[in-house]
Length: 447
Image (cartoon, rainbow, N blue to C red):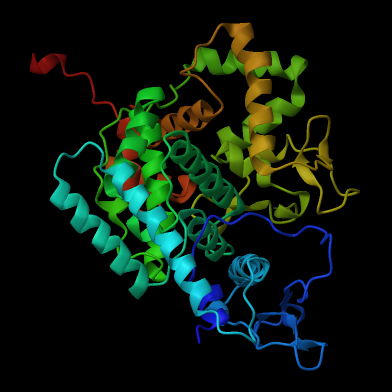
C-alpha cells in the first residue's frame, strides 16, 4: 500500500494555500506543525488526525518528519514543515485515506505530475527539431522524478534563503529575496514552469541574465549572477540540486563608476555651506572624511559606539567585523555633548544628533544620500560622479600625499593602512590607483 507519508515528503506539484474554513465536516483534522517551543534539540514534525472507520473517532496518525530535523535553524525547519503541511492538506482534500489502499490515487497523481513535466520539457525544447532528443529528455525527466526528491524552484529558493539566515546580513537576505522574486516573475512571464528544480536549465538562467543586462547594465547583470549563484550553491550543499551551474556562467566585464575626488576648494566650500545650512549633514560627512567610514557604516553608529573617555569609535565594517578606530581631535571637538542621552539611540537621525529612528539601515543611508543631493549637489551643480563617498576618497588622497612627502611610498602606505582599515597592502595600492591618489613627481627633466 502506498504510504501517504512518502507522498508528503517527496511529492511535488503546483501548491496553493489551502488554509481556509471548511464548509463541511471532514474526516481529518487540519495538519499542524509541532516546533517544540523553538527547541532545536528536539524533533519537529507535522501531525494530524484521521477518522478511524472502525471506531468512528479521530485518531492521531504517524508524525511526519521528512528531512526537517537535519536543519539547525528555526527558519529552515519552519520552511520545510510548511511545505509538508501544505502538501499533506492537499493530499487529504484529494481523498487520501491512511486507512485505505491509496495505490490508485498514487498512480493517478504520478501520471498527472509526469504529464506536467513532459509538457514543460517539450515547451522548453520547442526550438529544437530533433524529436529523438526530445523523447530522450522526457524519459530522463520521468526517471529523474522517480529516483530523487522532487521540490519546486520556489520551494528550493525559499529553503535556501532560510538556511542563509544568521549567516549573512539582513540586507543580503532582502537582496536574495528581491532578485529571486524577479527571476520567478521572469519565468512566469515566459510561461516556464519549474515544478522540479533539478530540471531547471542553465540556458534558462543565461536568458534571464541577458534580459537583465539589456534592460540595465552588465554590472547589474553580474550582481544578479552573484546573488543567484550564492542561493543555488546552498541548494547544492543541501542536495536540492546536483550542481550549481550558475557559478560557471561567465562574469561580464563592466566598468564600475567610482565617485570623483573633490578638489581642496570644492571641499572647503561645501563645509562652509553646510555650517549654516545643515550642521547635522556636516557632522555626518566629517565622520566619512576624518574617520574614513563608509556612509552605511556611519548610519549604523549609536551613541554607545563612542568611547568619549578614550576617544575611540567601534563600528561594524564592510567585512562584518567589529572594528575600533581612534577619533581624531579634528572630529572629536565637533561632536556635541551626548552624556545625557541613552546609548542605544542612533547617532544620526533626520532632526537631531542622538535620537530614535525606526527604519531600515538602507533607508537611513538613502535618506542622507538624498539629503546631500538636495542641500549640496543641487546647490553647487555637481553631477552624478560626486557623492558622499567622494569625501572618503578626498581625505585618503590628502593624507597619503602629505605622508609621502616625508617618507617613502612604502612607509606612507604602511601607516595609511592603519587609518583606512585596508587589510592588505595590495588592496590599499589598488584603491590608491583607482582614486588617482598616487601621482609621480614632475618628470619634465626626463623629457
